[in-house]
Length: 331
Image (tube, rainbow, N blue to C red; front, side):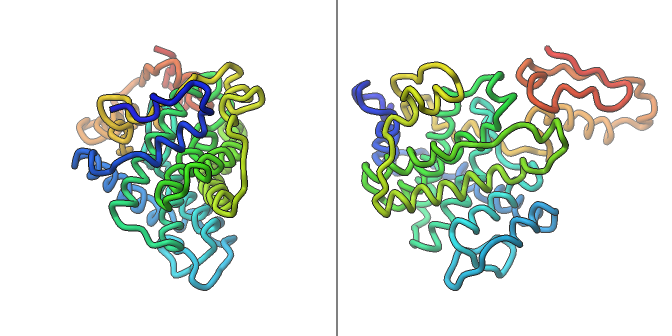
């Protein structure tokens, strides 16, 4: 069943998405979908625990403002404001570069959705079913927006997680808290105003990429709380003449972005990285690990040739030849 495709084309996209997100019936999902959401949550938590002592992890934890009865920063006894906790936890979840990945939207949704929902759950208690349903909605909405917005040219300049994950997380949080359609529309619209994350880091060697999910999660929390407080944002923020698609894609937005229109929810297309590396480096990294395990004398290797898709060759950092003897070319 397609959710969100029955609305009139005159209905702004932000409202279409808000209406669809709030209408989802968790009971209709197969047990495997809920199981996948649980795996994604556990994977996120494992990454966050392991990244606590990396520099970016310590930095994100260090700047979080302590508050009584606040939200937990994973792996610590520190309680912080929901926004600061979400920032720190999202940074931790991304700290190993081993987070979950949705290839079609080129996005790491989980490292933004889970910190947002966990922070909100300590402010407003949520049932397990509510938490999972909200996460599934967040993955779906973020994935579908990303599919419609991103191409290889855009991904060279902007980090997809920074641009689209705030919107998915804002819709997930709106669903979790049971906001009205008007408030959820404002939440996703405000979140779209915060879309950011530049891809200069691989060129310059900066570490700001670890903080992209942190900003996205904090912005999602802020958008939700502003919407709860009565803030009213532009409903045409996605398709408007100065909206998200015009600003970043430089072309018109689709008339609709339906949710759950495929054979299975988008969260089922999410995969959990086996090794801590970029999505485009996973196959090469796994091949290297296999060679290291199975070759008796690795010194016999004279050269390594890696064939990569065009999207990988154009993504910043992935066109590097790396070690001497390695040839990296588009497939």
